[in-house]
Image 1 (cartoon, rainbow, N blue to C red):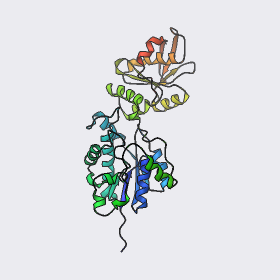
Image 2 (image 1 turned 135 degrees about the vertical axis):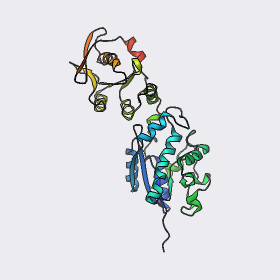
Image 3 (image 1 turned 90 degrees about the horizontal axis):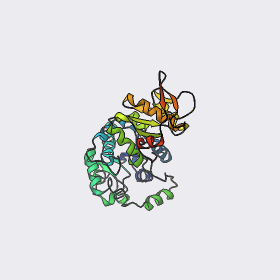
Image 4 (image 1 turned 30 degrees about the horizontal axis):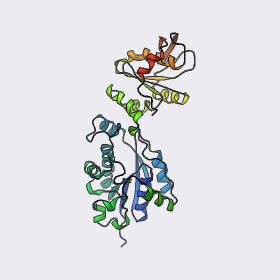
Length: 324
């Protein structure tokens, strides 16, 4: 009887490390499947493209609800911005762990590299993620396996430890060489999570301080300028036509715009009484004269007659200069 091939599912963002980890396991005889997680903060597109290149089975898993709960109170805290990387990774792996008995997978793997990221990929954090996820030693990191304690797939002979790698640190020369030797392409920058971006994190903190965080509001603040308004409200205002289109699509039909001339679109989150202030910002960014009167529509049934504010009244309301 032929020896049974091991089956594994990997958490796969589509970056260089994940591509190398998946291809390595496939080359040494593991049946590999891939899963990419999506949320308002990161998208599944790169993972889909990476899986297509590798010719491996792939699925997208929406973890929005889980991640919203983590953001409210991450047990392991945040990184340098609003990124709860340790708890987010553990939650992803816990989701994949539930697929092991359900779909006959033997273990979960990742493209993590020991020491590549100081907070989430040091030795202590790798151990913590494995524990928090509930996977324990059914979690394999093939790129750094030779530098870590052998895990169950290695001890049981499902994977030959001698064929795994011993990469550590922030340099990626070994991974790049591996990919080039096999003609594999990969994104020039990895991750893509908005929670690691300083500008987006400032915007997100304003939402959270006003208890306005939701999947919709998290998506809205990816576009345009964000303003902190009276009463804890938040206003999001488009910078160009593309922003306007995105905001209008997410506005549930309740966006602000000038009545009688082109200009930015805006969406109000929170206290409705802040709408006149946001209407003034719409008029200001349409470059109407300071002190003049403008008519701004809110949805289809409300009109605000506002005085165009001066620049000195607008700047203090802007959440951050950086673009998300």
